[in-house]
Each structure stands twice: as C-alpha cells, then as structure tokens.
Length: 66
Image (cartoon, rainbow, N blue to C red):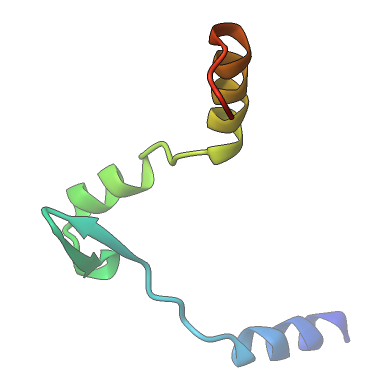
C-alpha cells in the first residue's frame, strides 16, 4: 500500500530544469556534455550566512559601520 502511494507521488512530479550562467549567458545544465555536468555538480556554492558573520566580525574589529 505504501509503495503505491510513493509511486503516485512520483507520477505527479514535474521535471525541474536547472539553469546556470556560463560565459555571460544562461544555459540549461541538461545541454552540457558529460565533463561540464561533472564540473557543475562539483562546484562549491556561495553560502551567505558564513559571509555575514565574517563581515560582522570585521566590522566590530575595525570599527566599520554595519
């Protein structure tokens, strides 16, 4: 019974197209070759919360206005 419910959920899903910016324009990742896809998925993504705390620490230390 539980498997049927999961299958029903999977049937209702919509495929999500991932786009990224390359050389100044946006392009879908699905059009990449195998090597470029591997490079894209191994990228480290920007994490804002880490930068915010670093900026706050810098501001406190050097007296900059936050």
